[in-house]
Each structure stands twice: as C-alpha cells, then as structure tokens.
Length: 111
Image: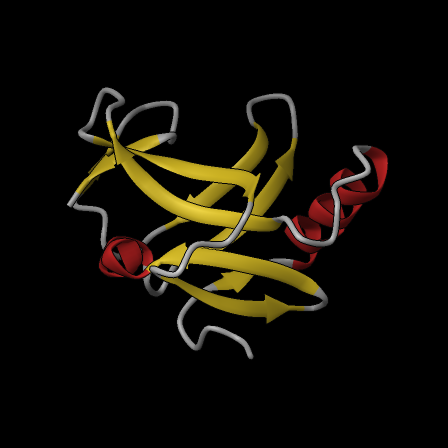
C-alpha cells in the first residue's frame, strides 16, 4: 500500500535503496518518516530506520517499507521527499506544504 499524500522523488528512492543495501538494514526495519520537537523553527524531520509500531501507518513506495506515526501524519502529509547532491545542498530535503516557515538549512519548520 502506498500513502496517498507522501511521495519520494526518484533520487530519494535511489539513495534510500543504496543505504538499505550498503548498511545491511534488515527487512524488519522500516524507513521511519516523522517529526519531533526541536530545531531552530520548532519541528525537525525524522528519517531513520526503525521497527514499526502499532500506532504507525505502514506503506510501501517502490519497494521501500515506510512507517509513519498516525499522530504525525498531519505535519507531513502532502510532502515530497527528495535527495539533493550539490555544492550548496546535500542530503534529504522535505518539500512540505504544511510548513509555515522553515529554517535556513531546511531541516526544521513550523506549522
């Protein structure tokens, strides 16, 4: 099942699959998407491998198992997660329509 309102760009899919392979991430761990309090703008993004919990939405995008805590869905629904490689930016980037403001580095936001 795919979450209808969260997308991974082709470059993000490629990088996540590379990480799963290179880091030997076990099949029972999912890519956890979410938010936590902190960062210079109020919330920071979670993007890590973790075991799913009974409070999670579980879905799959292009063979990547993803877990998202149901309570955090409102903060990142509609987001497109990209992976950038460049002189000014390298890493995962959340393009989040729910963010009222973002910090200069793009790793935290307010809603």
